[in-house]
Image (cartoon, rainbow, N blue to C red; front, top):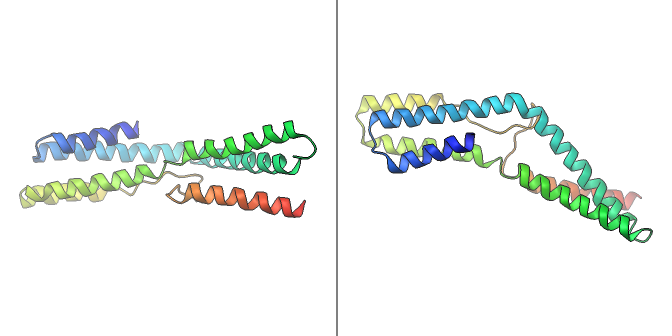
Length: 170
C-alpha cells in the first residue's frame, strides 16, 4: 500500500500542473503514506524483529552444520548448507529493501519543496508547514531498531562471523 502511494505521488509530481491545489493534494497523499508507515511500524515492528531473529538462527545453524558435518554426511551437509544460504538470501529479499521507503519519502518531500518555488509566498509557506509536519519515516524491527541501508550487509557479516566462531570453537 505504501509503495503504491509513493509511486502515485511521484507520478503526480511529474505529470500534473503545479498549482496550490495539486500540490496540497500531493502533500496529503504523502501524509497518508507516512501514516501508513507509522501504522505498519506500530503493528509489525515486533514481528519484523522475530522474523529477523529466525532467519539469523536458520542461516547460522544451516551453514555451521553444513560445514561441520561435511565429512560425516555429505547429503545432510548439502541440505543444511543450502538451508543456511537460502535463509540469508530470503532475509535479503524480504528485509533488504526496507530502507528505500524512508529515502523515497524524503526524496518526495524535497521534490515538493523544489516545486513550491514558483508559488506565491503564502502558498509556499503553507505547503512548507504541511511538509514539516510529516515525520521521518523508518521501518522498525522491534521497538529499538530501524532497518537502514547497512542492515543487510551487517546481517551477512554477523552470520559469517558467528559461523566462523562456531567452527573455531567446535
